[in-house]
Image (cartoon, rainbow, N blue to C red):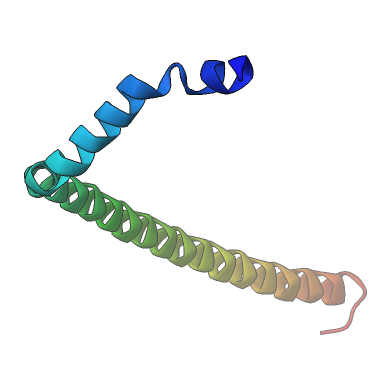
Length: 94
């Protein structure tokens, strides 16, 4: 019996707090929702802005990389053509 009494000894205040929360919830939740909703919307807007910015930066970087590859390929092709032309001149073939 003492074990059962010890088990229920601290429940009085806990039950009262739980009942108070259950009674106050319909009053408090709309007020909390009015505060939390704009904060959540601001957070979501910030995430969307960040995602758009990252997409733009990645697209710009990809475009610059593509341009760089095209320039290097053009220089490589021009260099290979010049190398072939100078090799041909050196050995007497044109």
